[in-house]
Every structure is written in structure tokens, then in C-alpha cells.
Amino acid sequence: MLLRAPVLLASAALLAACDRAGVETPAFLLDQCERVALIDSSAGTAIVGAEDLDIDRIGGRLFVSAYDRRAAEKAVHDGADEVPEGGLYAVKIADIATPSPSVAAHPLVDRNQVAGGLRPHGISYDQASGDLFFINRRYVRDGSRWRLAPQIVTLSPSGDLKKAAEVHCAANDILALGERTFITLDHAGCGWRGGAEDLFGWKGARLVDENGDVIARNLNFANGVAALSSDVIFVAGTRERALYSIGVTSSPPRVEVATRLGAAPDNLTLSGDGRIIAAAHPSLLAIGLQRRLGAGRSPSRVIEIDPATGGLRLLFDDPNGTLIAAATVAVVADDILILGSVVDPGLVICRGAS
Image (cartoon, rainbow, N blue to C red; front, side, top):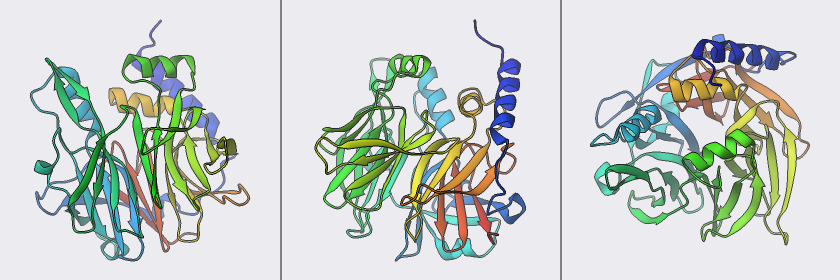
């Protein structure tokens, strides 16, 4: 039997309240944080849905992957003539360091360069080469319907599109690691098949390389991916509410649950001192309601993980989604915490950690 929306909302609130029991005081309190509008410097429009972030620590730039996913999915569902696009942007860290109601985001890719539309999802910056890799969720016409046909796109330091290669429809995040590239597939299938995996708890997610070869399988919604070395990769197991540690140089690759987080991790980034920063969802029910139905505000949490010990530190907690709902990514730049959300406009910037 299908539950009505008010019942689902009440259930989500109850689960979130239970999950908050015993949560420590975060390093950044809500009153130390502010929402900052991201303004497309070319179009002059406000940016919505900053789903993923990465950082160029040498060049002092923040990379932002953004598009309004609910608007795009509605257009696809309705069979609209066009599907809304987004953008891949660079923001100067110096512009964020000083409090301001808005900051300029400079487009890195001309939408006309990308067949099927520009809708960046997971991104990865290779500091050594200066290349920026991203999963582009393009759509192509299949008769009267739209079909998701994502690609891995490589952007050179000069802004040229070096390469575009098709990838599995469930491609979520990407990691450039030396000469290799790794991609998380959050499901084994897409459409109703992916829905069945979620409904029955099947572990069909995988980690694959640039050739499509499977590195690890039987993961539970593989999401963000990060690495401190070429030997071990950390993958967010969203429905596992944990981080996987995958030894990619062992044969066969070793897969372990590295640490359990008490919340569902989304994208992963690295701090300057080598700690993993995970944006996490305390309630998957709440984010599902907001993402799919636009109902309510999903709570947000950011957790810092010491990969050497598995120790956890709570950096940010917004249990009611008051300041930012459904935060999907967080980056630490010096003493600043930067959060992006798949559903909200702009960014949230936190300063002065306790």
C-alpha cells in the first residue's frame, strides 16, 4: 500500500529525530554559516543544484558541478522538447574567504560544445595534469522519449574538451588517480531496474575503471570516491551508511567496510591534511521525498574521517535542513567549510570552527 505524503513526512521526521540522538556538537555551528548565492558570470543567473565540488589548492579555485536535477527529470518525464542544462564552474577561493551575499562562478564549458546537453554530475580534478574530469548526464532522443546516455568528459587546463567517452547509465562519481580513472556505478541497472534494487536491498553497485572493467562489485549504492594513494580507494556506500575501503592493487581487489558513519555518505573530498570529508544524509527517506516530490527539507550532515584510524569528527549538522537541505558535498579550504546541495541554490560557507 502506498503511504500518503503527510504520513511519509511524519515518518521521515521521526527517523531523523531518532538518528540525532547522541550526536556530538559540530565543529561549525549553524550561526557560523551563511548561504552565498552563486552567480553565473556569463549569464548573470543564480545557480541551483551544486551537487559536487572539487578544489585546486595550488591555483586557489573551487570547481562546481551544478544543474537543477528536479527540473531536468521533470522535463524528461513530461517528454518536453528540451531538457534544462547546467554548468561546470570555477570560483576563486579568495572570493569566498570574505563574507559576501554572492560570488561569481565562471563557466568552464560552453554548452554548445556538448552534444546532448551539459549536466555535470561527479567531478575530479587532477592536480598533476590540470585536467578536470566529470560525469556528464546527457540525454538523447529515443523515438518520442528521452534516454539518459552519460559520458565521461575530460577538460584540459586550457578549457578544451580533450575526450568524451560513453559510460554506464548508472555512473555517479569519478576519480582521476595517476594514469587510471575510476567510476562508481550506483546501481546495476537504470530506470525500474534501479528502483527494484533499492526496493529489495540488492547490492548491484560497482566500482569500475576507465575501460569498464569491474574493480569491486556487490556494493550498496556506490557514490562518492576518494583516494590518498594509488593502492587504496575509499567509496561511499550510501545505503550501507559506511565507507568502503578497496585495495585496487591486490588480486583480487580487497573490499572492506572501513568505517560506519551513522548516516548515508554522498560525495567525498579530501582535506589538505589527508582526511576524508563526507557529506552525509541522516535520513534517506527525507531526501527521497524532497528529491522526488519536493516535499519537506532533508537534513544535512558533514563528517570528517581519519582514514588511518577510522576516527570520526562531526563538522556540520543541520537536522532540520534549515540552512541547507540535502547537502551532497563538502570541501574544507583552510579554515572554511564549503557545502553544496543537489536541491538548494548557491553554497553554504562556514567560518571559525570551534
